[in-house]
Length: 201
Image (cartoon, rainbow, N blue to C red; front, side):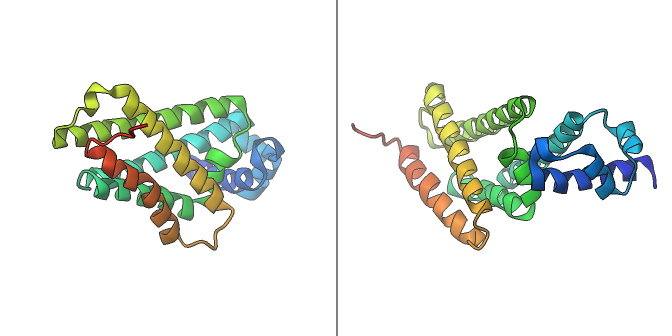
C-alpha cells in the first residue's frame, strides 16, 4: 500500500470513529485498528489526534464548500440559486452523515470550534456576495446596506445548520420534505425582501 493509500485509509477510519464517538472519546489506537495499520504508522502521517481531527474537518469543509459553490454557480439568480445551494447542502448532510457529525455535532474542542466559526463566516460571506449580485441585477440598494445583508446571511447559515442537526436525528424524514420547509422559510421572506419590502413595525 502506498503512503497516499495508507493516509486515505486512516482518514476513512477516523471519519467513522470520530462520527461515532466524538473527539474526546476516540483514541488513536481505535483509529489505527480500524485502518488496519499500527499506531506507529499512523504517527508517520499525523502527529496527534488533534491534527488528525483537523485534517478530517478541513477535508469535509472543502467538500461541502465545493458542492455548494458548484451548485449555485450554474443556477440562475434568485429562487433557483437558493434552491440549488440548499439542495447541495442537504445532499451533503444526507450522503455524508459521518462528515456532518464531525463538522458540527461533535465539535467540543476549542481549536475545532474556532475553525468551524471560520467556516460559518466564509459561508455567510459567500451568501452576502450572492445576495449583493442578485440585488444589483434587480436594481435594488442592497449593496448600500451591507450590515443588513450580513445579518440575513448569518440568519440563513444558523437556521440551515439547526435544521440539518434536527434532521440528522430523524433520518426517516425525506430530504424533499426538509428542502420544502427550508425553502418555505428561506425563500418566502427573501422573495418579498428582494422586491424592496421591509417590515413596517
